[in-house]
Length: 480
Image (cartoon, rainbow, N blue to C red):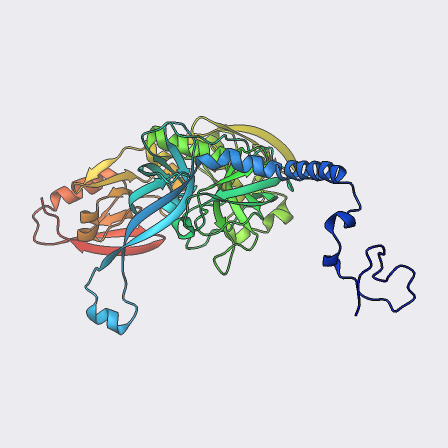
């Protein structure tokens, strides 16, 4: 039978020439197997543990701790019309059937009195909004404003003070630096309200996403990151290694709906500017310069012409006063190279009325410089003429035509229209009324007068409108 010799270390009896046997470690007292004195082992163990603990306290850990208390879940309930999906549904589903749908997103608190920034596509159509903080407390939120173009919305919650996020700057980000995306990708489905953290790097800056038919927003000048952004992360903060918010998580490119390592965030400077406009004016005052540029069908032209071709300049516009004209090539604006119309849109999104845009343009082979002073959109400043009770119209001018990209040089643009009038007339917002019966329309006041004369008539009025470049006609009776 094999045995272990307490005096040996190779499993054989001392002085034995017999066959080698496998040692039975359990038979050796632990004190006899130590190769390092116990005191030294303890000292090294403590030192190693301290090193490990210190290494765990990385910049990402610190940043997550700093931003965590300000991150919230945004829970919305919206009512949507249910469309029949089968013959069974068509037979049993009532017409106009609607159901309540729950939605989920993220956000972050930016002021101690409870202002919250999130994405507009999170709050769109919401009947009720509840904000849940990290500690699990629920707060009814009021929607102060939302802007589909930039995909930013601002909420207000009460009973603070609340922990507010510290904001940084996206303008000094560098490709390759660490960032973390924070949010609640699956909210209550995960069983708690602690925000999730994913880490990555800044993959690219100033990214433009070609708009699709499903997108109401313009995603230009975006921060691209490989930090995982999943459903429910929308509206949460993108944070640098110092724990400062540098962007608002907004969209991902994915066929499956999950993260594929290509995520985008709205620069924080844009988000804060839009939020400030929504809080102060309940709407975003858009920038107008008065020039048209080459569109989506000419995305590759910049390689040939060296910039972005200007196709039209509105009379008496900032561009006109700056002596720009069709045929000039826009090289840069506010330091940003302008290669496609998306670059120009990015510049305009980040300025408002009264701001300036320093431009470099090329004419006849020579580069020139001019600073343009931005104005408010002409449609917001134009006289609004009321008609049919809840309809407001503005006269089409060269400035309005350029702003809205209209094909007609005359008519009255429907600036606003109520739901009841829309249903009874077939007219829509942004329609351009060109003719009523046989009368050509050149002024919004003519529309009001034509409708006034038609009150009580036994014959309907026929209205010809331009809708998206196509001509439509609609007939309706005008009542008091």
